[in-house]
Length: 414
Image (cartoon, rainbow, N blue to C red; front, side):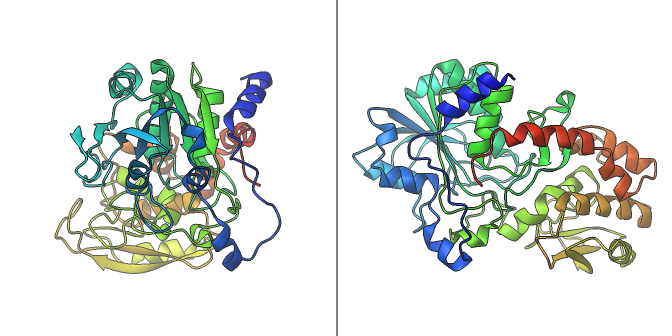
């Protein structure tokens, strides 16, 4: 991508409402009262950015105001905006579906608006949905969790691509990255492993907001960039965790109940690619990991590594659904005691390495789902060959450094 194109996109990408955030140090307690999401700022401006447009919202239960009203309900009641359609992602617009599900096409009982299903739709079929809906502008507002394999960012990508095909304008209303935007970490996806848990070569923990990702997608990956505008969150700094925002947390998916879940997710979601439970069906998904036959040796082995910011407790639990439903299994609970020092991706790799070493029943999923999650065969084959945590992590540093250089071009917050 030539710098001239980047410069043009950067100039066009940010709306007048999206002024740069302050870089002055602000106490967390004060900053809580100052954080305003992209939607907050759009509404305060009287929806001027959407004037004269038939608007369709891509959103889910996380699209809320500070007083926890859904933005679709708010916009539907406001005569200043012409909201005519809603587009639901995985889990659905109102959030009634579990992982791997959606709500289908229906009319929303609360507003009467038509709701279209975007899940697993892309390209021309999704463009046809936008055309059928009759909207002029597609607006995206969904809370992300900060990991490459969290599917909402690929809903964003697919909707941007489809909007370009359908000749629609695209607006992204930003929200904070709940696990900060300090740095990108982890392996970078190889294009031959592209799926809905990773369409394009970005890092496993990307360290970006959805507005920044939209600019990256437009500038680097979309063959036809979409007319894009972004409305930024103000009062949020890249070093801020979600609790510093003072914003209410709504689970963006059924197994992402708290910001603590998001903190570990970019590492421990890798256990979806194994025969161990990743804690689905418990009150601590992705913090509890285990399997039938695992004992205290795993926690002991992981603690011996002295990983920064985290300790591991021998734990036993019985998932109510998913892997080992109704079976009491042994494993570990992750306890993060210093989130500034904690590296979720390195921790996830260390737990895979130690699980394989101490439990003879360890196995990868037969479909090699781990390769889709990590973005290549490298993690799986290195661990199978007996590599340690540091060796596995070292293998992706060159590609990560290259991604960080590209990423820097699209960052919007200081």
